[in-house]
Length: 118
Image (spheres, one colour):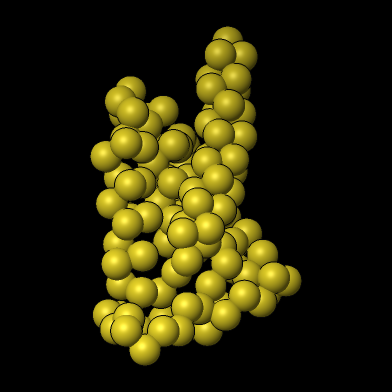
C-alpha cells in the first residue's frame, strides 16, 4: 500500500505542477545562444514538473526504503533541466519546493497511519 501511495503522490505532485503552470503561464526560456536539447510538452515553464515529481518521489520513496534519496536524485534532475535550456533556475527551485511539500505531507500521513495501526 505504501508503494502505491508513493507512486500516486508523485503523479499527484506532477498534476499539481501542471495546474500551477496553467495559472502562472510563464513561457520557457528563449535565448539565441542556448540550444534546447529536448522536446517539451508545452511552452510553459513555471514550475518544472520534472523537478516537482522527482522531488516528491524521492521524499516518498525515502520513507519506504529507509534511506534519504533526495540528495542523490533531486540535484541531477534540477541541473539537467537548466542544462537542457528548458527552465529558469526559479522554475526548478519552485518545482522542488512543491514536490517536497506534497511528498512531505503524504509521507507524514503514511508514517502516522502506520503508527496508528493495531
